[in-house]
Image (cartoon, rainbow, N blue to C red; front, side, top):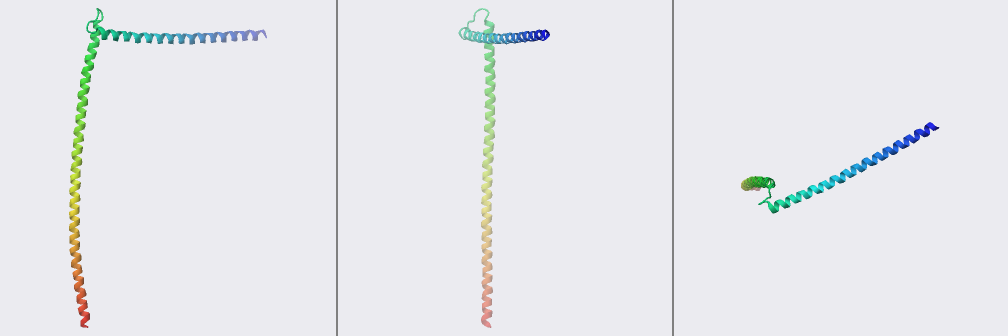
Length: 158
């Protein structure tokens, strides 16, 4: 049994070593993450310092800062230029949309006029058909009346 006891001790020792190494790796990752978080905070503060310096001294930067200030001014000028292009593009699009809307309004008005004209023509045609039908009915009624009168005369002669 000595062999198995010795093997068990070795396995137990190795597993404890693995657990210890795992814990050390987890701690290392945790510390690296904490360091990274603090470095991000420092970078954010550097940004705030730079922005504050630029705001306060952009017109009279200290030696060694003029190039940085000039880079910012160049970027600001480029932004203004792009904003003007964007504004012109929006105005162009707005104008085109307004033109299309006006054309659509004109087309709708024309369609309304055509529809109104068509309705008037149909009404006139219906009135004309009605008048013609009434005349034909009167003519037929007169013929029926004449036929009835002729039949009455024929019956009275008999």
